[in-house]
Image (cartoon, rainbow, N blue to C red; front, side, top):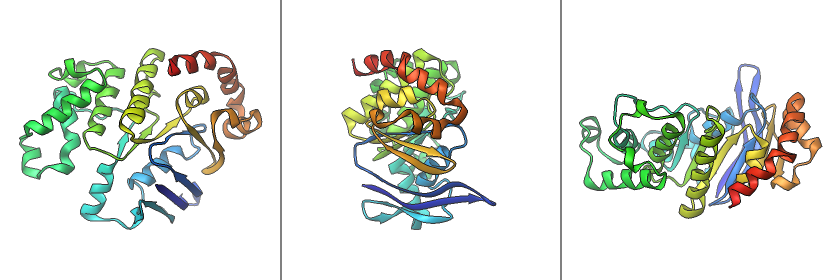
Length: 265
């Protein structure tokens, strides 16, 4: 169980996240929705401890994550892997080497610097790539791949950390519709087949309804909605998305049906 208790993060006078309290069940696929600037990215960075809270706590399986430091914090960041909108791959390195950098918390500094990966590490890397239909690209340079392929490599890198939780921060924001579906299908498969808890920031209400078991809606740093996709009313959507609500609801009531059918097929 991941418990977020009264979490607040201020930047100067502005609260990017304000008094957020949530409980995330193991194995859940949670979509965090809302427009840009709602606090979604800051919330995920707080959970991963890339940003420290101004107030509140994060507790996972009885461990106070907000109190961790040193090696214990490094282990938490391995257990709670981040996937970013920017793929953050090293373009001149091959795909498998990029994936194996996810093992840095599990190996010695010397081995990682010299790239002395064990056969077991390599097998883990190839298995993660295979799950994402990317094993055949293992020897290619990362900068030779398309955006969707690079994002799948980034997901494989997160998987070899052997995480309990995946935090995906707008993972499909820079992708075209076809690659968006490929990446979201991959995250759904990881959640269902491996039982890994996923918190995924999404701007699209349509995608959130199609893929996520539960939605958390944020506006101005606050949680203003929690529930399933069918619980989200037009009034709540307007609170979440403001002037953008018309476009969001149009997608959800129209094209969204096709996306939901494809996701569940």
